[in-house]
Image (cartoon, rainbow, N blue to C red):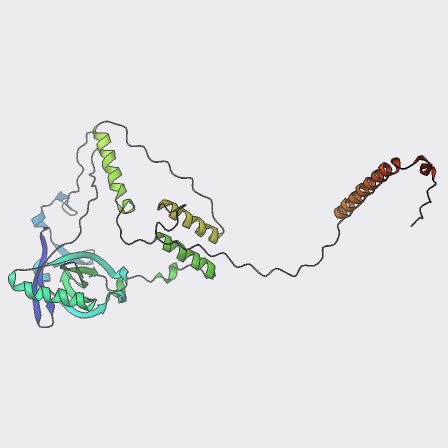
Length: 337
């Protein structure tokens, strides 16, 4: 179990729960040191007094508030411990609220609260079960590292978790970042929802949620240690150009999401996927008879001439089979149109 980083008590009305605060998360990032390229000597940061131009020891260093460049108000750790705050050694619960009423941007790092001894076991369990049954979270005030903070208490399995929270005035106004007004059609919204349905899952387990960067750095370090060539980078897919048709982009995204989950060409084997809606087309204008173009007239004349030639050839064959006396019969002249 990680070491305790703070000790105090949870104040819940007249109920007090002695606790220790321990870290709830671990950082597995690979750390690098700075070194001298010429001889690989470590490069360190030294604490030097600007006035005496010499390195000073830790016991010679204090902290203070700078009023001006030449005037410092010293403040000691004991001064901070003796501040007249009820939250100096307590996590004081001030309200219970639904979790969805808290903007996630205000929620920070998490810490486990561990009951301090047998005397704290029962009130700790009481608070944990009450939080779990109410489906609410507790908002509390506490003082750490020379400042008072706001916190959120919630239940995770059998433990109570404390999340640091930011004060309202610590959240920047995002209004200056909003895009200019644009129109989004209902079909595009439905298309985005269809893509969300395709990408919906029940957990956060799998290769998509592993730290690939740290693994790649570890492989790089191991290859260099063994004087081998670093692992080759995978070939990146060719980046598509700018897509102007938003519906086409959504449709392609849905297809790729289905392929990545092995759903292409299979019916009913995986999660249900809704097809993207097709944009509504405007009603076609009433059709009017098309006028004959010169090309159409020429085609009609050609067809008529061919038909006439065929009729003449058929008549010639028929007359050849008739008696000879009838061949000399004079034809009546055609009337001119």
